[in-house]
Length: 221
Image (cartoon, rainbow, N blue to C red; front, side, top):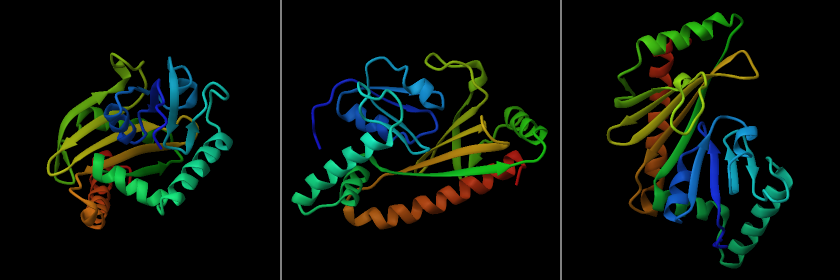
C-alpha cells in the first residue's frame, strides 16, 4: 500500500478532492485540470491520474491515458495484500475517511431538449449566485470562464461552502450531451471508525439538500 511512489497526482476539477488531501499528506505534488484525460495526461511528472467518470491512469509510463486493465491489476494487487492482513478494500476506504474526512459525492444532471435552457441556467447562476446551499454559506464563487492561475478558461462555475461541514459544487454544461451537469461534494469530519455510519448518513442528507437548493437556484428542475 505504501510503494514510495513519487511524481504528481492529478485529477479533473469535478473529481473528489480526497486525492489532493492524500497527496498533501504524503508530501506529493498535486494538480487539478479541466475535465478529460486529454488534460490529465499533459500534467508534467504525472504519477497517477483520476477522473470521477471512472477513469484511472496508474501506469503513465506504459499507458498515459485512462486504462482499465492496469487499474484493475493495481486493485487486485492491493486486495491481495489486504487479504493477507485479514482486511478488505472497504476497510481501507474507512481508514481514509477517518484520516482525511468522509468525502461523499453526488451529481445533479439535467437533460434538456432546448440548449438555451442550459445557457439561461448558467446566466442565472452568474447573475444571481446562491449565497447558501443546504444551510451552508457560499464562501467563494469562481466563474471559470476567466480561468485561474492554474486552469485555462472554461464554461463553468465553482462554489465553496462552509459551515458545520465543508462542501464544493461545480456547474458546467456537458461537453458531449445536451445536459447541465452539477458535481457535488461534501466533506464530513470523522473522529473515529465508530462515527462512520453517522457521518455517511449525514453526508447523504446534506448532498440531497444541496441538490435540491441548487436546482431551485438554477431553476432547471
